[in-house]
Every structure is written in structure tokens, then in C-alpha cells.
Image 1 (cartoon, rainbow, N blue to C red):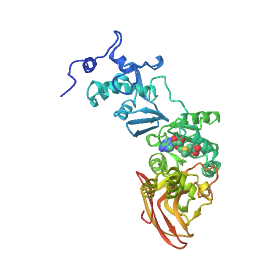
Image 2: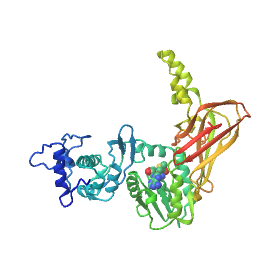
Image 3: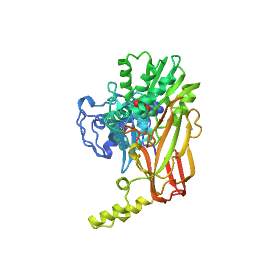
Image 4: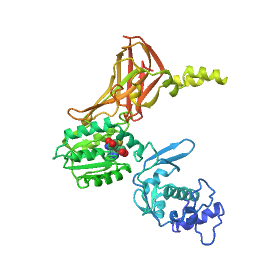
Length: 455
Ligand SMILES: C[S@@+](CC[C@H](N)C(=O)[O-])C[C@H]1O[C@@H](n2cnc3c(N)ncnc32)[C@H](O)[C@@H]1O
């Protein structure tokens, strides 16, 4: 049955429907629109909560999705949005709302577009209020609003801490600079994907590049742009805001610079991003910094106190039982039934007992990445006697002809900005020197996984 009768104004029908569903006390000058847009209660029935004057929406307010959004959807009990580090209540149509307001339109136009997805007046009201909440949270912006440049969520690329860590990692940054200086000539157009604070784009410009296109998807790009100006390089570096996959450049580049190597090395989508850049943004014989990436697994015996800080162990369960008179064995058994991963600076693992030489998990020529799924399995021989309880995943990368960077535990510095993935085996393996064991690694759409001796 069609809820809406043709020929009669949608908004008038809605008003009468709502009034039937639940009598609304509207003061004489208050319209349903005002009521729907004025509060941000999380559920029906509404509580009237007035927005500060500057924040009041009308149906004619033009809105657009904020340009630098980083959104994470979670669904523990109900959908929540983490927007630039702040939590906003979600709605089943949140993604549809974001899609609708990808271009600027009035509240009324946006809701009209979404109307076919709504069943009834309550649904419309709840969606209208969700639009208001998204507006208050800065997800949808009016004509004069802007997302603050720095957000406060420390783990995000729009926040300061992650860039502070990277700039304090002098080995990383200076090694990339060295490779750029070795590679760039005055004839070169450079594209820097993920410019962040702009440090590598500026290095390329100072190394003489004809022009640098600095692409950045987070708000940090706005600061990079100001930094280019302060350094007198505005005419040589163009900031291109957005994701590289969604951008076309006015000319193809001779060199790609991109430091988008993740903690789990492929997590920042270096393969997908580089593949797209090679196909669309670069000249056929372009040079890449980095050129190649090798991923290794180093089987080790992680120390007991480190292990006990990350998984439930049988020793911890016994200790707690003695302290608290409760049997905690289920916790330890649960931990022992699966592999776990934690993030650690490989520098902190430099003294751990190594049970074999590093095992090559993947060797990737970034210019021709055909397979974005990795599956490998290797027979390895133990070089020491001990308990293999963890595998450290680290990378080495060739940045240019003579410049390499490695975060092998013996080569990483205390300031290493990567928190490498360490796999903790649920079921540790006791090995004697010379004994063989099997190690398998896979990386795909769902991230990475590890097995030792098939477990
Ligand atoms: C690891 S940081 C490196 C920042 C800077 N290049 C440096 O070396 O200090 C990676 C940056 O790339 C950005 N980024 C990652 N993938 C991107 C893409 N495909 N398009 C645009 N920016 C991207 C992130 O927002 C982040 O600021």
C-alpha cells in the first residue's frame, strides 16, 4: 500500500500523519519542520532541545558532506559513527545521507531524494533529526562551515601525533629525502601521494623538480599547502586534496613518491594506490620511490612478561587463581585457541631470541603489482633451541638506486615510527636447533593471517 497519496503536498500529508500517530503539541508558530530540525534526541518521542542559534537548520539550509571526513562504522549495540575521532549516533540510512549530500543541496531537497527509502512519517522524522545530528557534528556542513584542520583523535592522519611520530623518525624521513635527492632531476614532474605535512614534496621541489603535485586525503593537506607557501614553493608545488584514486592530474608524472607503508606493511593500501597511480598518473617509464617492498616474518621467542601483557596465559591464570580464589583457566584456554596480533616497534624486540633467519613472505615490485593477494608457505629450519611463540612482521624497501630502508629489529632505531605487527601463536612450538617447521602467511581483503605448523 502506498503511504503517500499523489497530488497532495508531501509535507502536508506528513504533518497530518504525524499528528495522528502521536499528538504533537506544536506552539502556534512552530511548524513540523522546526520541530524535526530543532532537537537531537536519540529516539522517539522527541524531546525538544534547541540548537544554539548559529546551528539552527531550516529546510532551506544548503548542506554538503564535509570534504575531509574519516568515518568508522561500528555496530556493538547500535550503529555508531566515529567522525574525526568523535562518536555520533548512526542511523540505518547514514551512508545514504552521506551519499545524497555529496553535492550541495538544501535539507528539503536531500530528504526528498531519500524519501523513497522511508516507510512512514516516523521514519522521515527520525531521518530529519539524524540529518540535524550530522550537521551538529560537522559531518554535513552549511555554506560557511569548515572542518577544523587538526582533529583530536591521535591515531588519525588528520591529527598531529601520527605526523609528529613520523617526523621524529629521522631515519625514515632522512632516508626518503636521500632517495628523492638521488632520483629527482630538473626535468621531472613529481607526484607525492599522501603528502601529510608536505615534507617529501618540499624535498622533491628543493631537489629541483619541475613541478610537484602533492596529494593528501586528510585535513593535514591544508597545513601542507600553507607550509609550501611559507617555504616559498607555492608556484612549484600544487596541493591536490582528496584520495589519489579519485583524482586526475593536469599532466602525467615522471616520479612517484609515496610513503604509505603501513604497520602491517600493506595495510595503507600501498599496492592498490601504487597500481592505480602507475596506470593513471604516471608516464610509462616513471620511477618510483619506493621501487620495491620486501616483507619478512622473523620467528622469535617473545619474553614471558611481554606475552603476559598481551594474551591470557596459563601462568597468569594460575597466578590470578592464587590471588583471587577463582578458576581463570577458561581465559587462558581461549587465548591458546587462536593466534593474536599486537603492534610493537621492532627496535624493542632487538634482544629477543631468534629461532630462524628472517623468512621472506613477499617480494613486491611496486611498478607491476599484479596480485594483491599474497599466500605463501615455507619450510624453515630452526637456528636456535627455544619456544617459537611469536613472529615479527617487518619490511625492507628499496627507495632508489642506492638507498634502502629496513626496520629489521637490529636495524630499526628507537625513534622508528612503525608499530610492526607481531603475531603471537596461540599454540607455541618448542624447537630444537636444526629442527624444521612450517610457516604460512596470507594477505588479502580481510588483512593478514599467520600459521605455524598449520595452526
Ligand atoms: C604515512 S603518512 C606519510 C606522510 C608524509 N608523506 C611523510 O612522509 O611524512 C601517509 C599519508 O598519506 C595519506 N594517504 C594515504 N593514502 C592516500 C591516498 N591514496 N591518497 C591521498 N592521501 C593518502 C594519509 O592521509 C597520510 O597523511
